[in-house]
Amino acid sequence: MDLVLRSDRVLLGDEIRPAAVAVAAGVIVEVGDRDAHYDAAASTDVDGVLLPGFVDTHVHVDDPGTDWEGFGTATAAAAAAGITTLVDMPLDSVPVTTSVAALHEKRSAAEGNCLVDVHFWGGAVPENTHELGPLAEAGVLGFKCFLTESGNPRFGHLAPEQFGRVMARIAELDSVLLVHAESHDVIAASPAPSGRRYASFLDSRPAAAETEAVALVIETARATGARAHVVHVSSAAVLDLLAQARRSGVAVTAETCPHYLTFAAEEVPDGGTEFAVCPPIRRSHDREALWDALADGTIDAVVSDHSPCAPVAKGHGDFGTVFGGIGSLQLGPRAVWSHAAKRGFGLAELSRWMSRRPAEIAGLADRGAIAVGMRADLCAFDPDASQQVHAADLRHRHPPTPYDGMTLRGAVTRTWVAGRTVYEPVAA
Image 1 (cartoon, rainbow, N blue to C red):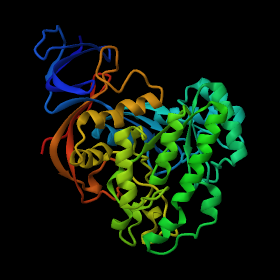
Image 2: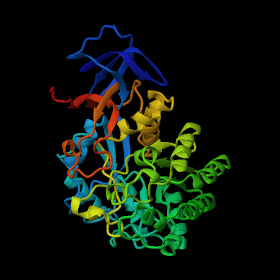
Image 3: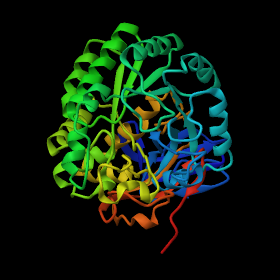
Image 4: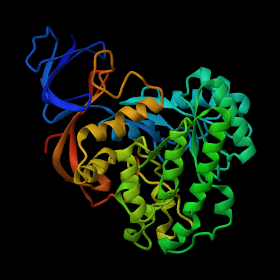
């Protein structure tokens, strides 16, 4: 054995109990009684609850080619959050990840700069259907597309007929297509945002845009047999569509994000462009419906959609010019736990939403649980700690975040990736 971790509280399945977790060559090889004897090079008594490392499958690292986020800063922030795996989105780097050559550039940028395990989604755009097979062979976990403008002219959105062709190809590849499900037509017909009023930003991307797009995703997944995953669900209006589709056997899963579970439109101040994200943070009714959908399984997972930018791109309080994205990678598990605990959920649910289900959706079968044969990707989590967020102290490359000044529940006291410590807070 290389390492034995012992704790009075270890999450095994859906139960927290005392246990010892033995690790060799980065893999969990035994789970036994807390005081079981193992011949190991090192043994550690863990403070807090030993959890599977969190898995964040929706992260915009934007490297190479931009100064918005890098693999070093992103993975440092992830490690501090107890996130042991992240999957990078394909659209905000230069080049975008829509070819094998671009994927190689991504991997080169990441090599030697990552504290946690990093994987990649490929992009599906109108002109690269011929690249999907080679990208799958090169190791992307699946593909991401937009049904409306992505905000990046190098990453075009799919019209409905193009979307159908891409989904058919995804079915042939036995892959998964992640869909930014907002309707281009609905958004084009909506008033453009302007000025400091958050209401103008909310009105520019109405719930009808999500409803129309999710209906198209479900219809196309049913027709092609492809597996679809709806990213960053924000609207209560799509939840019945998703639930009915799943009951009828359509292969569709869905995620939401910490900001949709934390904030509500009524609470966003005018000029608060740090809250701008697409789709937008909606009203408290939507927030509560999303929590209900997590409880009943209509929504599978919670991931960050960490989409940072340089401070100048947050628009100086003008919703007409702001970049829509929220920096939150280091905060997601604590933000969700802060509200989940108040609603009566436990750490088993938190781990299911933010570790096991994201890993399953991404096809990463060797993580997301503490069990023999799984990677020793783990974190020690103090569920009762309380910490105030100071944006300037976060490990993201740029500090803007709507969580600045909030007090969040929980603290990560140590993170291991493949049995190796990658984060331990510095003592005050």
